[in-house]
Image (cartoon, rainbow, N blue to C red; front, side, top):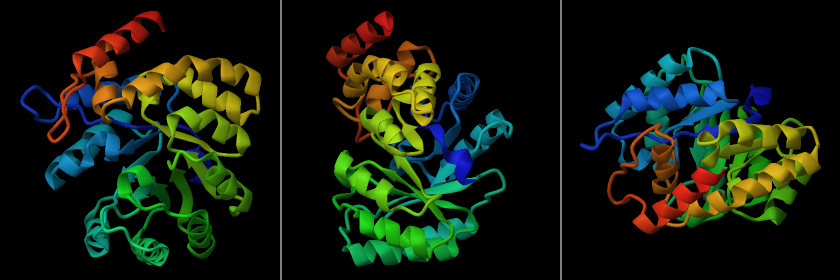
Length: 292
């Protein structure tokens, strides 16, 4: 499994129709577009999938649509995370993992636990999980930073914790993780703008937002990085910097959905409290897509 979660993973959006119901046709279209253009695995129901405004029933329907569209072509990773440890264990116990390769579990948000609290939370998740777990550290959203020493401790003590999606935006923290990790433990970039430098430094690739819009080029960049071909990979890296900045300028996933709408893959609709990208941002995105 560890080797399967390398390269380009995408944090897939959940497309909505104008009435805010889930657009399963568009979702299947995005899955096929990505698999046909080089995406290595798909992450379901993460932040970019607007997981906090999706009901349990909708989440199951999203999984079913992606499983059907995927047809066992690439690994699927399911987001199961939050700040209620007992509730997460209950969700794990009631989930059908027949077509799921791994779990992505975000560090608890809002509660702001100590490092010991984060450690105990993931230790409990590890004991409950029948599937490999990728930790997810994104302090910009959770209000607490899961420090490298806690990640390494969990990686060492829990056999089914196989990697971390690191999104602190801190290269020094990435370096500490790569330097001290167990040999087969995966350090996966959760920062699109740092995906290539992290991969070249010894990371396993990226779980990307922008990658789902331009999977062919983004996947090529990451795989060149995995091969150590920095010169060719950086040519692609610099092509992506402006659009990465644009899609996160207002909120995620409004930015990436604006790109996907421009590519005719889905509508740009999001659920409150998020709002669609502003007209000014859409104009900049349209200009990028027209010239990319």
